Length: 142
Image (cartoon, rainbow, N blue to C red; front, side, top):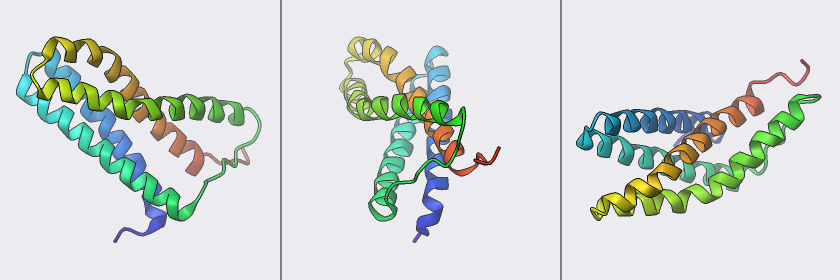
């Protein structure tokens, strides 16, 4: 069993892994390597799904983590957090529809929605790491 205190760090790693897999998946499809693209994107879904389970478990047991930063860091943090949270709520169904269309062979419909899904999902993954860094690694006394 992973200790509760380690979950924020694991979650940040899973978000970072998702971002890397998304970037590699995009590169694979641009290079017309469909089998690699499929493996990378399904892996990104797995990493993001694992993140979601660990995130929900952590917050069900640890509660809310408050941002301790002061000054200019506060509006920056809350600006990032608000866009991250809003898009995170939207990305799961968008990813599900995008994946469904690909797995059903509806490639034209998949491509149309993937053009929205990829940048939004990438933004959510990267800003998840930024939120983590600001919560756990930014010294509020600076």
